[in-house]
Length: 481
Ligand SMILES: [Zn+2]
Image (cartoon, rainbow, N blue to C red):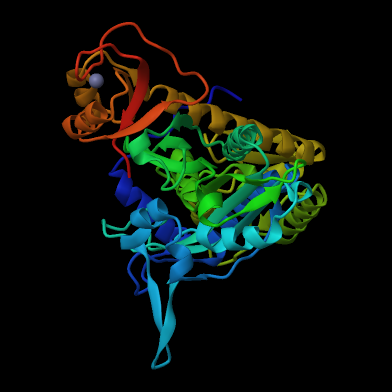
């Protein structure tokens, strides 16, 4: 197999492409008559299920336990942590009536679950031996978005919100947990082949109530930045507000140290967008509902032989643990089947025709590059498995290369602005670290300060690109969703 071609250029506008793919595959139906919500179709739900499984597996492996909290949060609980509620207040949906009877206490539909979970932490945590607590849930949350909604990206019902919440005895342990959270998220995005940069968000853009937030951002094909995951160090702000403490060896009480981290269906939007091309979806095998589609190339007089061989091929591939589909629809031509499965993103297509029967071969076609490979029938399973691995690693590399080219260091605001207006992506700039200057820079560039590189902060030589005083860090800036 030759070199993998670069991703096909978008022949149209990315927004249109995204809408077309999610509605034609179909993955997510936006015709449901409530703004900012959508319906996962059967095929979309299968992709979602596989992605959720990747997330769940990584968390379970690292000692997290899954829980399920109620959707409703009483008003007095939601309002306990002042900064948190100040930021969410305008976004909360309220339940005020039971039938026609006004409720004594207004109930919020969770916009996120800190204020639902931490009152229970207060009951569960008493002794040092109760720590650490590491839990997560995968639920829906509601936010009254006032900006224009976008399917899966800016929604009023986030249908797939994975939130993890942890509590620890010391600051050091909680900060160690932040590092673990970042590592877990890296593994999740890596196994989906989604490239990312990790940034510590500036103070004015951190999670409400957190001491600091680490965010994962990727760049979509239109050059806009999409936040796909965040990890927050909460310090003791919430434990003090919710009175969550444990008794130390000396008999004194200490408030616990907390972290929380979240991922939503934006990760699925990113998955679709960073790998897809003009033909439709390109899915890594880990999450493809159909990993191999088998298509009989029927020929008059040999229909039965060909179909029988195809069924054998399906049986062998299934036995090897693969998700396989035989597309034996009689009313469709092979060409229209190719079209369907390219759109749906099945990583490998197997074709069996009369010539293959005679020669004891089969044809494999990879979805990402559409290259064909003739293999011996006897080695089909082995070759298919190798090819799937190769495709996974190639699409991951290609997406990473694409992102790497879109994280660019610039020396002036003018250059940065020009780049953001043409190719988009992420610009790295020298910055003084002053909040006023950072916000001014956001206005001038009409962009968002994403923060500084997580884990490798550097002190650059030279002046801040905005105010001219001494720079003491590199910040990343991009136009975001
Ligand atoms: Zn400055």
